[in-house]
Length: 292
Length: 261
Image (cartoon, rainbow over all chains, first blue to last red; front, side):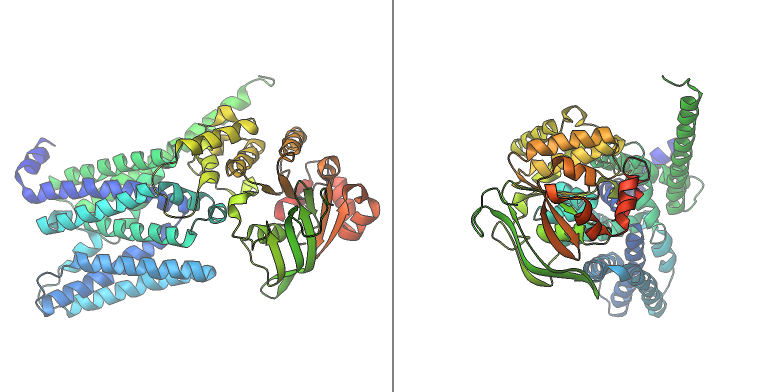
């Protein structure tokens, strides 16, 4: 552990990785809470896999045509927002087919990504780092994009808290109050998409959904209100990413996998602990003599 | 069913003329006409699938009629959300949603437009007053999910009251609550009726005869009755065979029919 702290102080890449983890955690806590309470986890899964298409395309164009400024992360942002708009439109216009469309985006996005990555001249080691993340690869330039995305996500998520809470809790009532439910739903999907881009840099496409939902799901067990859930999910996400980085750094294990395993273990313990507590409470109630 | 008279005068809150609605090919309401006047306390009565909730949603503007004319406060429904307090059934909500009572009631203070940031002091005051009115001021900080069914129903009424409506619409307020809660609700609605028009969907014929002034019987068509007439023949015409079952179940826990409407 001491070694990790020393390394973080001296290695710029590790320091960047830690900062990215902490920044992404704020978006993750705020947006993850919306995703869990609004029950759009599967939709978020669709967006995150669709992102590979954008990353592959951006990398292909960047290498093939020597576009220095074009980075896979830019492709990820574009693809995520595109997916959010497509899914938002589908869900507003034709509710009943939403899951089919999600599945279609999920798979075709990945197919497009794999195709472009294979066609890209030169080394193709990037596929693995897109899929499973490589937070230690984040450059100074990426860091700035991540800061901007994070600020946009958190600002929108907090400024429209009342409206987003209302459409998550009771969409019909919100509509009756004169809220433009479709617009707020689109805002929610866009900030979900941008959060997914941040998390892709931390844990990769395949494991994004775990980091988006597990901290919020754990926090949900202990929270009375949505904003408490957000604060607690943010703290948990920070603990998971930092802990995962620290645990993987020494033995040189994949950091993304380590982060998700820690998150999964804490989630499992929470669910089990909750079940045991409930059972015990019930037994105690049953053991009490009637009339008390 | 008028208190103030005047056919299309200022006293008319809801005016329906030949309104029809269908879900796809399935007709739900056909050629429905009725008036609801200011200060009325109306119950919408009818069998499952008869179109009660649909009628309520047409009045809110959440659904649009296929044909016919429907006016609420002299305007098209949907333009008048500010004046309507809507109380849906409480058990349609996610039981584990992390939200406290105060935050639910504050949703009644939402407005259209691009208002950002927290609720103002005025909104909190109105929400607190609404909670006091339904007798739940002391549970404002409790999670909504921890409350009993009757309390949740009253929180949803408070949320509707927080908008300071002139017309209160309730969907099955007595479904799934016990007799004690039912009489609390009856008293509450009775006192609210002194300052607002109330329209309530219900299965509960006992609740109707005790409180309501007039009845809209909905089964594809609508028939208007003053409350005194809602007995024997009217009801068996509306429900047919079903009536015996509904009445039979009333005081038992077997009132499950009400859950599915």
